[in-house]
Image 1 (cartoon, helix red, strand yellow):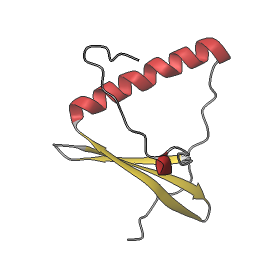
Image 2: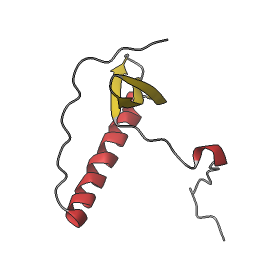
Image 3: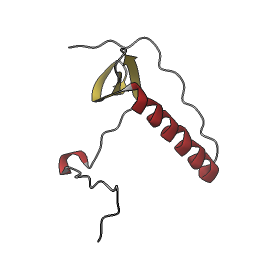
Length: 94
């Protein structure tokens, strides 16, 4: 298979291929970066399962990509019903 101009070949490590399930996300930011902590919460506790850090410019591209994919999903499968908000603040145990 020939590589197209500008195409980037990504390696996908086996240990990441199964992914992780998250039902909550906490976003914080500094001037230089956004930090997204994904967690699995099953009251009364929860666990952070992934942390993604990125710069503000890339964060805008992520938001656009998510909005575009939600529109495509709803066009195909119907309106997504939003889940109820989590009750109470989240705290980290370091």
